[in-house]
Length: 238
Image (cartoon, rainbow, N blue to C red):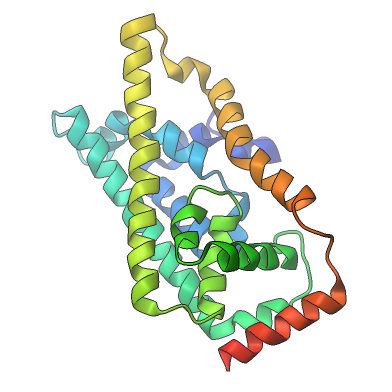
């Protein structure tokens, strides 16, 4: 499948790999972490599936190095760079225009509640939030923006951003590549034939805890409370 036939196709990471390969993967990673409208794009599942296709992706883009490990490392390194740059853009955007986002009306692609949720996550987990957020859909999109709004120290943000970006990209891409190798060698199963199931599992593992936390782990939004929190954020910006 190489054409977008419905909205659900936008969540299929294999589609992006076949349509745009290496460069589209990098753009999606950048958009999901650097542009707040990118939260609906596949992240974890895209990296895992990219790991399965790592050798083919590098070979078609640059030519194979002759080593599966080096090909996979090149892909993971490029993805890590795109993720790190994306977060830096989000951080800069938060420092420059953060308070204005809290006054922005909700749209189909932007929900103000996501900013509040990311802010609460940041306040609860401190510096580790930047690293932890990498593995949480939606949260990873808004976390760098919130870090910019609350004036997180630039050096500290860069450090945590680099660590998080490397861990996220290398863990998921290498997991995809070597789990596929393991299943083929031990069970004769090619994970490329089980992608729909794999994507569903990854989505459930990464999104269900976040959804449960957002729905049941915090009280429903109180406009007055949110206004007070907004004032606090603006005061920090000033």
